[in-house]
Each structure stands twice: as structure tokens, then as C-alpha cells.
Length: 312
Ligand code: FEC
Image (cartoon, rainbow, N blue to C red; front, top):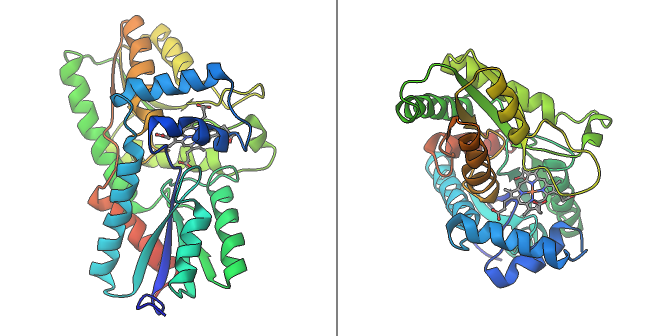
């Protein structure tokens, strides 16, 4: 039995990203629940990864450093009590691998948390289902952090970023005053509404709280990164929103993707390349808030949420 056996395991879950360009097809196939992408779909995704930072996968490094940061934070607040394991939704180490590693170390009690603040049955809910199934199989008691979208330290970190972003936007837009803040998150299929899913409500709550704390009056919420499937996804998409608000006279935009916590494809491509190009076409200035990555306030949000779900 390892020296970890008496500690509380912390399963830190994240979306996952390919390990190399050779891995993109397997990754995409996993996202598509075992259905390989068409050659065109694969080429399109490969191009997006190539466009961000020349085929690097920043989400892997960022997830690694968030897991290490959470371990450090837990160690400083409750020395020797918690040990973190990583489990990814669509890449190795998978969620089940993380739970299995806890089992091998003799862990009996654990907490699961996702590196995404808002609950949807299609996001956090599906991570939790897989973690719980494996934990039950191995006889591990598993507590869950289902969301932390209104944690005061998360709100503070986001508020600071909106304030910084507005200053940057003022400089790049030459002091433009027709400014709007667009809060955004990953779209999901519209059918989540029929299921009474809390995702939209939680996103609106985070956006409203941050806008208020940052003193922002002119803001709205918009979706981004909708999947390429035939079913309807929640909208309007940010590209459509940019066009609408330009018609309303808005000339400068700060995007605050509060549904995400790291620099990754959906931010570095969908916002920094695609949305920025659309803004330029519409003769608008667009800036984005810095992502949380390993922000100490975010690490504290995670550590406090873990400790509240399973105190020592
Ligand atoms: O940087 C990277 O390599 C990965 C970036 C990445 C993040 C991410 C987060 C979320 N997704 C969510 C939902 C869906 C649904 C589908 C879907 C599809 C993709 C594809 C890629 C992708 N997602 Fe993602 N997502 C990231 C990347 N996502 C690539 C496939 C190609 C495409 O459609 O663009 C549709 C498939 C399905 O039906 O399952 C739904 C949600 C999040 C935010 C919460 C979280 O992080 O878990 C929700 C990061």
C-alpha cells in the first residue's frame, strides 16, 4: 500500500487535447464517440491546430500546470491530506485512467472536480458519470464539485481581467467609447433547454456578477464554438453577434470567454483568429481578456471547492 492510501484523492478533469499532430484523428474520433471524421473534417481541424501556434497543443501544458498548482495550493492549506490525479475526457490519461491510478495507490475517498466552472449534463455531468462508474467499480467513495461559477475568488479573477482588458481595448481602439463586453461560452445543442439544464442560467449568473463588479453597463452574452452537426445549437454565435452590434453602432469589443479557463483551440482560434478577423472586416476593434490558466485566485477557487466537497 502506498503512502498515498490515507490521503483524499482529487480527480482533476479536463477536456484533453492531442499529444501530437499524429494524434488528431484519434482525438477527433473519440470526441465523435468512435465515429472517425471525414478527410475534410480532419483536414479542417488539423489546419486549426496548425494556425494556433504552429501545431502545438497549449491545453496539455495548461492542464498539467493547473493540476500541479492545485496540488501546491492544497498542500499549503492542508499539508499531506490531498493528492491530485489527472483524468481527461477525450485524451490520455482518460478519466478512467485517473480513477484507476487512485485505486492502485489504495485511495478510498476522493473528490472529482472539472476545469470548467459551469454545469451542464453534456459537460460536467458526463465527466462525473464516467468518474463515478469507475469509482464504484473500484469501491472508491467519490464526492463531486458540480460547479463553482459564483465562487467569489473566481469572480474576482475574472473581474480583474475584464478591467485590464478594457484598459487594453481603450489603448488599441484609440479611446473608442462605443464599447461592449461580450461574455461567451461553448455552445451546446439546443435540446439541453428541454432537459432543464442549468448551463445557460449559470453562465448568465457569472456574466452578470462580473459585469456588476467591473462596473460594466454595456454587455451581453453570446455563444461560440458550436459543433459541426446538423442539429440546432444555442445561438447567436459570436460571429453573428459582432455583425448585429456593429449595426447598433458598437465599435470596440472586449470578449470575456467565462466558460473556459485555459488558453486552447476554442479561444486561440475561434476568438483570436476567427472572431478577430470578422471584427476587422466590420471595422471594429476586438480584444479578449487573458485566460485564467494558473491564476492564484483560480487555484484557490479549486482548492476551496475541493475542501468544501470533502473536508479532512
Ligand atoms: O485545445 C484543444 O485541443 C481542445 C479545445 C476544446 C475545449 C472544448 C471544450 C468544450 N467542448 C464542449 C462541448 C463540445 C460538444 C462537441 C464538441 C466538439 C469539439 C471538437 C473539438 C473541440 N470540441 Fe468541445 N472543446 C474543445 C475542442 N465540444 C476540436 C470537434 C470539432 C468541432 O466540432 O469543433 C460536439 C461533439 C459532441 O457531440 O460531443 C458538445 C464544451 C466545452 C466546455 C467545457 C469543458 O471544457 O468540458 C461544453 C477546451
